[in-house]
Image 1 (cartoon, rainbow, N blue to C red):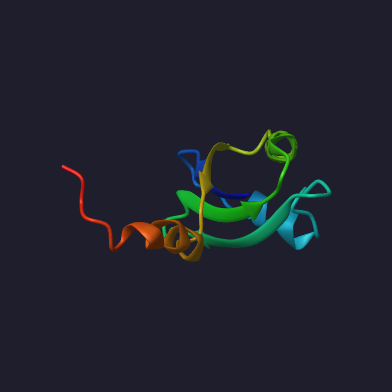
Image 2 (spheres, rainbow, N blue to C red):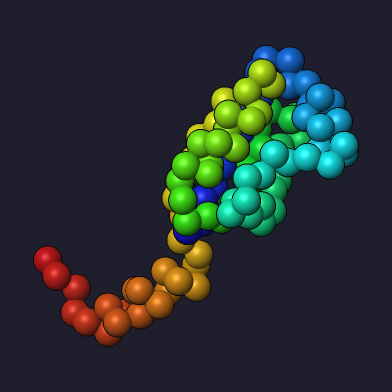
Length: 98
């Protein structure tokens, strides 16, 4: 399953400790949790990451590994556009229900 992880950083938006941790080689990913990609807002207030795993406990473990950093985490299950298009395709030629 894919998840959009939204990290919100504290009022100081101090990314240096987090980037130092990443530079030193650790995303703190437990085996089975895969990092796909991430995007950071220009003001450093939020990070949007796509992660993949089949066991939600791995996401919980990952969140616990980052405690102590000034951030909160929201985890949202997502479906790719291609997968959604495949689900919707059989309905495209059906008349709309009212």
